[in-house]
Image (cartoon, rainbow, N blue to C red; front, side, top):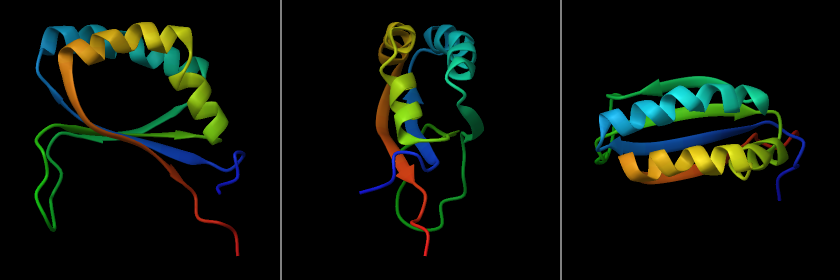
Amino acid sequence: MADKLSPVHFVAHFTVNDPDGYRIYEKGFFPILRNFDGQFITYDDAPTVLEGKRSMGRTVIIKFDSEEQCLNWWNSPEYIELAKFRHAATTTHSIVIVHSPPER
């Protein structure tokens, strides 16, 4: 089990079906993320696929200082309300929390 105080990366991959609805989500996203000290690392709409097949869409990576911090953001009333726009405007393929490797 990962240490809840170690950094984690939140990775999401989704296809935008409704650009106007997604813009509403995107506009509200960053202020909420900042309130939970999340650090937006990057996004890519067309990464280079080295192996296998990839679903079309956007991949996003966000860093948090801990899993607890990430889950507090994800489960916050503000984000839950905003996520309704994402649910309506996108098809989400995956959302994961990637833990840092354990110290040796």
